[in-house]
Amino acid sequence: MAENYNRRLNIRVVGLAEGTETGQPVDFFESWLPLTLGMATKAGRIQLERAHRSLAPRPDPNKYPRSVLLRLHTFRDKQKVMEAAQRASQDGALTHNGSRLSFYSDFSPVVMRKRKAYDAAKQRLRERGIPYAMLFPATLQVSHGGSKKMFSSPELVRDFLDSLSG
Image (tube, rainbow, N blue to C red; front, side, top):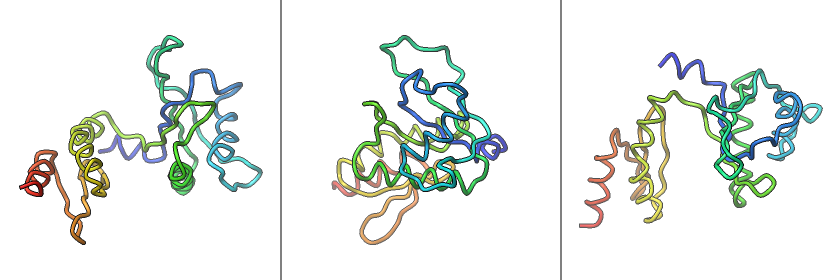
């Protein structure tokens, strides 16, 4: 869990085309974030400590781009960016130059694998129009029948959904 604590100020931006950032990545993203997300900031910038692409090899031009990792200066700034990204995507897909963007908190590979295990269950919930939220590290909260139910494994969510069908 120490690794996740070290990542608490990080945001992962998925879908941004390779080569979008020009010049120094930190300088670019400090002004790009408020502009893209419609955020009000001091001097039109948000303070970042680091900004870089994930450390995978650069993909071919026709392949999906590497994600961008941003480390913000404060947790409060991270919250503001994540809230702005959520607001911007509520009106429709958040895009930049035709590319659909997604903003996520950055988690360790162990936590990401645990969260990914819920993908099929979340798809079934979306198909049924049942609201849910993913809580840290990997607990699914489902709102149904005026109450919230917590599930610690994808199997428990599947059993719950099967019980609704019966």
